[in-house]
Length: 166
Image (cartoon, rainbow, N blue to C red):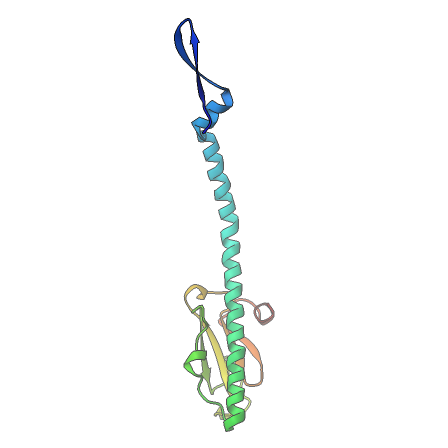
């Protein structure tokens, strides 16, 4: 440990003095002005970084939903190849790991599309990824994918290319 004070004998009386102004200042700590500058810098960085980080997370959740739809479509096609018709999704494919989207399958046409076969029976399917929790109100809304590979959106404020393309 560094010695900050030294004792001198002047006229027989002990006298304490600091080694330097630098040693006194480091012992005193931060001034109020320095502390306020640090607080302002942290606040500015937080104001810029947090919205960007939230957008980054939402984009990641969207990618996860698209991947889950593709995985569910592959499962539906494998099941149809093996049995001749589409079957309900297993529970393991009905949500994404983050819990931000639920996946549902329907024999009817996807919202805004006409079915390839008029009766909409077990020879067609529509997969719908509906946002949950933190993704509710997302600009891409719900993702849809049908048995022909047609991709679309339901309740979205963004375009299909913006949401499916990224």
